[in-house]
Structures are given as structure tokens and as C-alpha cells.
Length: 169
Figure 1 (cartoon, helix red, strand yellow):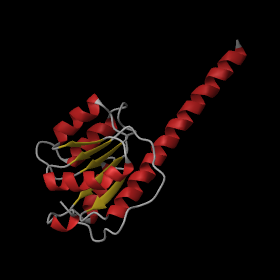
Figure 2: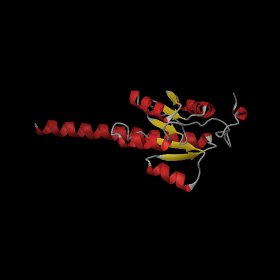
Figure 3: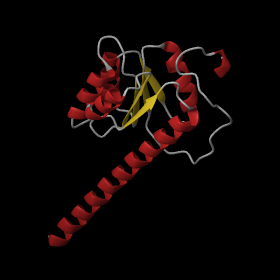
Figure 4: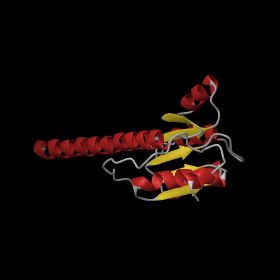
């Protein structure tokens, strides 16, 4: 299926060419949306990143998927059955095991209040539909870089503590 065949609310405004940028290692991306066409389109865009791209069809499925195998980033629709994206985001951000996973809210809602509520619920970024492929990939790569750098910093701090403790013995 080509982009021009999509008639859903994620159809891109501009979709020229591929985005050439160095791949960032990641352990997975989770896309959460109750609309199958939206899932397919976002999945196709994110295939360019390489790595594992998983999907969940509602908030409860997303929570279960994250508990089973935490992804490195989550793309989260807001309006879903069973559990809204706001609720999923709040739950994940309150859990110490998942609070550092970057979450990008992806939604047709575009009122200032919706953006504020997404940020208040803990979202790291916000994209409105129709999603522009370049903007999506740029933001995902940026948040993956931040996550990668944070892990490297934590590892370096741990190494320094170990060396300091060994020197004190």
C-alpha cells in the first residue's frame, strides 16, 4: 500500500525521499494506536530506523507490552478505548522501572489544552496528525539519542563509583 492510498488521519503532507542519518541502536519502538491504518503507516515510517518495531492496539495492551519488554521509545495515541493515552503515559511515568522511556503523543487533538495535558501527564514530545515523516523520524532519533546518552552517563557514573570504592579499599 502506498502513502497515496491512505485516507486516514495520518496521511503525510510531504513524503519526499528517505531521511539519511546514521542509525541509532535501540532495543525497540512501541506504537500504540487503536486504528490499524495509523499503526501500519507509522510502522512503515519507523522501519527506516531499523530494530524492532512493535504495536499495541489499546492502552492496556501497551502497559502489558512495556512490562514484558520495555521499548526504548513509545509513540502513543491519545484517544483509545479501555485506557487513554494520557492514562497510559501517567502510569508509565509514575513507575520507576518505566519512567525514563521517552513517550511521544501522536494525536489528531491539536488544542493548546491537549498539548498541555499531554505534557502534564509526562509526555516527552507531541506530534499532531497528519504526521510528517521527516518530523517524526527527527524527533524519534533525537529522543533515542538522549536515552542512549543518559544510559552512557549512568554507566560512567557507576564505573567511577566502582573505581572510587576500589581505591578506598
